[in-house]
Amino acid sequence: MLTKMIEQIERMVLRMEPHRSVRFLNVSPPWAIDALQRARFRRTLRLAAERSSFYREQFRKRGIDVRRIEHPSQLGDFYTTGEDLRQHSAEAFLTGRADTAFETTGTTSPIPKRVFFSQRELSEMGRTSAIGLYHLGIRAHDRVLSAYDCSFWVSPAVLRMAVQFLDCFHVEAGKIPPHEFYERARAYKPNVIFGEPSWLVRLSELARERGTWPVKLLFGGGENITEEARHIVESVWNAPLYLSYGQTESFGTLGAECERQDGYHRNDLFFFFETPETDVEGYGELVYTTLVRDVMPLIRYRSTDLTRLVDEPCECGLFAKRIAKIQARTDEMAVCGMGNVGPWVFEEVLRNVNGHGADWQAVIKHDGKRDVVELHIELDHSNHQPDIERAVLDNLRAGFADFWKNYEMKLYEFRVVPCEPGSLRNGRKLKRVLDQRQMALPRVV
Image 1 (cartoon, rainbow, N blue to C red):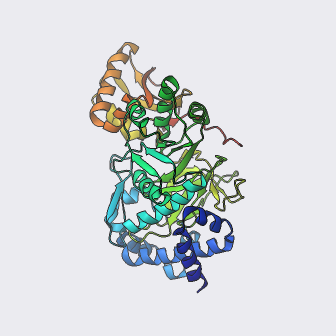
Image 2 (image 1 turned 90 degrees about the vertical axis):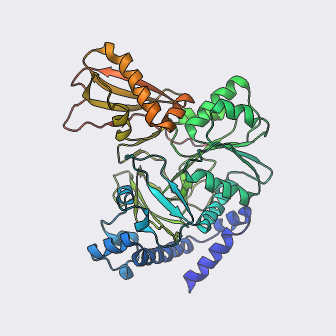
């Protein structure tokens, strides 16, 4: 009875105007959110066990009686992975009627992960996102321009819904070249700009040369960014750049920064977060369970991102706890200005390219302005480098339209680096994608 009452109050709060929602949630006792989480987890678990063929079979094989499970940790070593989504198809996870779907923007495999949702779920995520954006200062009189990529990506759809609840002006430009966005955006005089961080860096370089207009804030999603690159964007526009963290599988935002830029305030109303195995500093792989999804819930989904959960209150005063800035990934995948890249991408760009050995390694760096992708290749003769670089770029252009578009936009640099035969492999296993970017500690403001 108490849980139902709390849930009714929560649904009522999310349907309030954003400023009222923020005030109400800030005074809500922590035990109320905890009770709501646990009740929603039990409901989601039962729903998955009854209607999803994947979960029903997995629970049967493992002898899991969902009626006895009160907390995700009681599921032991059971997790859902991205590989499960690819191998079993999205239909095996469905528990209700879907009317919209999105795909992952990049994975360690050429096979995308498809995730299904309902319009009701989209509306609820939009309302929650509107609360977070209101907390950052977006108001009805603001003018929002978005350069998010609309191709199968969930973020533009969630943002579109959020700005409806904020009742502010919104133009969706899509991920067009920064120079074109710059020329066309000035007519709308936007004071809030959304885009991928590497794209925002390039836009800011153009704005520094050609002039800026008054901007309240910029908001980035889809990839991480160094603090050095963030400073470039902020210094050009004289406005803060905030980041969000999420995945297509989570239906967008799992958390977003506040004005302190010290980790992502997480959405505990819609997700149950865990880091089951951590190091001495508390860092481990983030695992989450969806709590309000009736179409395609995910139980203990492995994000492959290394972070830690921060339960201490943030100095901004917001009620929500935090996810620390992502340290790394547990798989060989990098999210950078090129896009979301894994080993298979570089295997494809090297396909049918003659003159190199079997060993290669992609190294992701940052030069202070943009990401640099260096493809280290063992060559018998370094004078083969120009021919090989041309062949690699031809394959990139022919096989990866999105990566090539980012290259033409100058969102990253691509280099082929010749290496001596036998120099790359120091042990039995060679790490194919090496991310050497050092993410600075969040600033305290």
